[in-house]
Length: 495
Image (cartoon, rainbow, N blue to C red; front, side):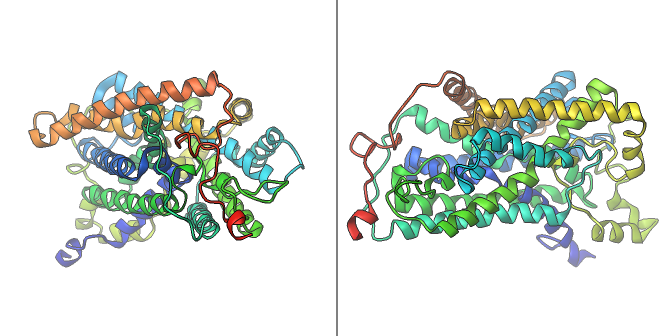
């Protein structure tokens, strides 16, 4: 037993790491090469290292606060209430609802673009957005949606494969290129990197659901640190590889960069991409967003059903209790009376996704299903869920031409608040007297910097979203020499 406890990561830890990886690695990766194009490699690497540190620290902060919390603290909203009272609860709930509503909006915009690209001239992008929502609607209406490990792996693998294909197409298309042009640095342009990185990393809401299922919750900080660090390395490889071939001329979306023009058959970078490779990349990313769309909406459904319909009420018996995860009768302490409990729990751990983030009945299928019984309840929750999706479709159609700005807006606003700022604030509030000064200073720096950049990028990207100005600049991140001209045209050079 002692030997097993000395392992860096146990089998159960790896299962939890798989959960976190699948929740984090998604559409945010498409903007990683664009971050290098905006800020240049040096500033972009510094920004990525800072965001990696901020997200690792914030994610571990959630784990640390959960270790102090009573067992009744099961969801992210519960954690906010226990750590900071009513304002903490509402900040956590509103930020979570906003992120879980706006990220599916990003999915609809991206999905409409991908389907329009796969089937050109069939329907408009707006019609494809409506079709995608209709395709996902039956899944969204499942009252007790569970995302299986297979579906999670398929969605995550879809993103990984799409990224690999996208980078490979760019590298092959730009083969033989000279030195790449550097970006023309402006503060607003560089600050926009914060929005995309926040979107790419956001996984805070699922950590409480994961930690309450771990047989030894004290190991979760190590699991989160390992997983987020691994993801950061992948982000760095993806971004630097694409930038090495394109420089400042890659767009905010990797997949849009490899799409050929219908008339010339050439991409915006001047090379002829393989249509089969483009189709595969688009299909794999479409697989990811189709799976993730329904899953991300589930916490919103739970929260609104609780607020508007009075469902999913939780017991508050020990919300103020001083007994913690470490001190109470957690699964880690059960082997003394029932040695088989831990083994069954560890081997039988199911995949936990964002869909479970606000489910107060997780693990009790009968109690969860009972919430939706009765004709009146069924009509109410179905109508409410359909109404939410209709609003998302309308918003997506309005913003369909601003994918990059929408991504930055969502990342800088609700996701940075949800996944970085609030977790660190909760930790500082509960542990201020015990945290050493050498930890307080970087924690406060993270909160101040992320709050400032979050407000600034939310304002600038929001202004572009809701008060857009027309621009015919092909490569806006470059200086005047290259903002309209491809720096290296493989087709023109080699025929």
